[in-house]
Image (cartoon, rainbow, N blue to C red; front, top):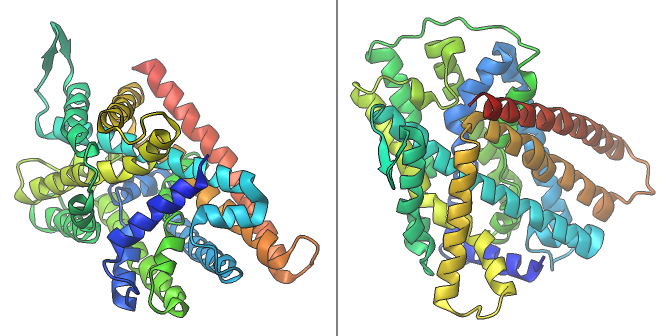
Length: 413
């Protein structure tokens, strides 16, 4: 795995997220909230329905734990001014193997998020046009599958662009999209006749692994935090930036979870927009806002996955070769989305396997190796050891549960 390529990509991302050298506290806080504001907002109520009302405590715990491990990454960076990216931290701690592992997890996470985007498009377009079907080469294709194919065709040209700055500005509207979604759902419940009448369960042991995994997905921003820190004019303010980012994101996630669960209870779908009645204006605003997110972000997400592949092949400067590679990547994500079109369970897998590794385990291991040292016995070391043990247990159980659910769904399709 070429880690220099990762550095170049993250350097580009830094330029896109902070439009001038030395980002201010305010702009860095906005970027931090934008990093944590993603499609997880659509499924946090579904996660709450899986775990019950008391699982809100787990959402807060995960937020606090993710905030702490983000601080650990900063401390790792403070130990060496040459550290600029997450793979650099892995390399400092465990050499080329550590850097390669973190890079691989980053690429896999981005790839699966792009798959989630296509599933998201298919689900919500099918919600708007439930009776629509497609005739492809004489074969009738169902609405959801057809819309996934159509979405792949729509985003394909955006992946051929070499200058993604325009899309970067649009995708920075993640914060605005989150606000629109929360307000639209609140409006639907308060004024459009849906109401807040569902009581829900207090606690559900069986759904807890899925709930925790999906909560973890909401805080998968650690791969970008080192870049965000390096972009700041005053890096000593980075902990405050993290505090603002995690606080705002957790409030929005918690509010959406409570609203969605009160509105739809145990009947809530993996995306709250799928429960909204399409006849209401507020519902249409929420759904159309949701549909814009993948179109704006897909190319930005797939870019870091495509670039290292291009760098390892002959004719790396060829525009045609670049388009061919990116087309193959889009086709592969469409294939995976058609194979496992289960938005909630795929999100749970990402959160359990990749989210916990990137946001909990790797920061703790790197900090332990770089700053504390394996031979020193301190209270903080014991705390990190407990976090590692709990994190590995949750990752194993959550990943097993997500994979089992996906397999069961595939078998019953």
